[in-house]
Length: 163
Image (cartoon, rainbow, N blue to C red):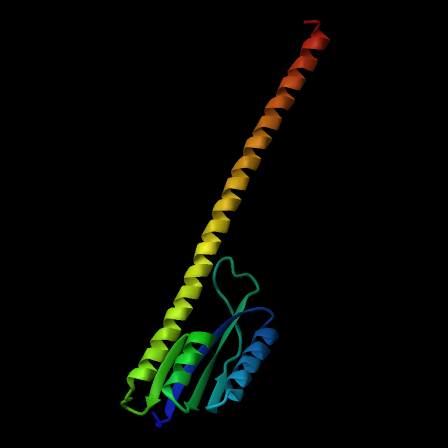
């Protein structure tokens, strides 16, 4: 696989303040360009804009279009798996020939990534269940304490009235 790949990536970022997200995106793209086998031929970082969505107070979003040349298709997949662009478009060549080994490598990397996300999801679910159980226990303890408090107040009231 000697043929180089020309591709367009779009990366998006959300956060605040606007200067920070723009600088962070620039640094992110610079790191991409430092990778061996990747040459950035064009990058355009758009000005941050406020997010116009309820609950997104003071949040800004921006995106960058990055056109690059990669030495091989594996680098394109690596960028996609590790840097999570919102869009990928292969510009050249029109057709790509993959060897079994290269395709196997890409599929294995995808499987590894999926397993990691599955592990994170399962751990998060277990932690959520533990927290929900602890919350339920805390609510029961609070209800018991409130019941005890009412009984004590009732006893105080009975003593004052002479009963």
